[in-house]
Length: 154
Image 1 (cartoon, rainbow, N blue to C red):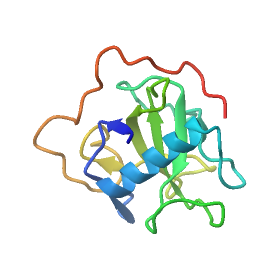
Image 2 (cartoon, one colour):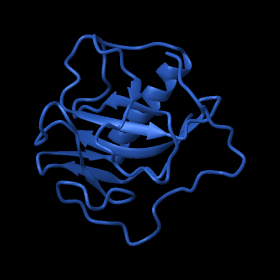
Image 3 (cartoon, rainbow, N blue to C red):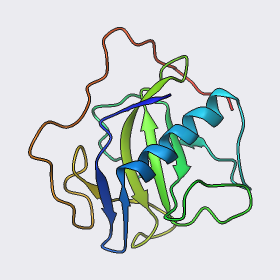
Image 4 (cartoon, rainbow, N blue to C red):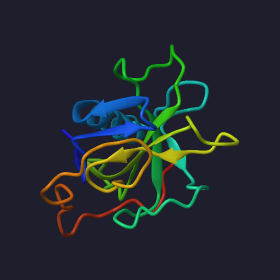
């Protein structure tokens, strides 16, 4: 079972779509699992590198970042549209057993196929949408000594 650090209990994307922790965890762990098998899904070959053209601040995670669809209906498959929303993970361990949650992003409300951040209760408390910040810490902290990927070849 993969560990996702800083995973929020939920997020809200531009006051349109809300995801709970299980949906976020499912998308993040599916991305890790596929990457570890060097497999991709769909026309756009998810998971794939997220290049951060928007210059978001993922100060708690290191590149390379992976982008993967998150859907209200469950896990993404080859047979459907990826929709507007994505999870982004970084600081991926070399054995793909763990990663750091960076954000849920959405194309909704952005221009030229760009992304905006969805608001969550751990690391993206000022994203678009409304989601109450947790009263405790930011989430599980990454363990010391994790060996991280410096590139992803999928």
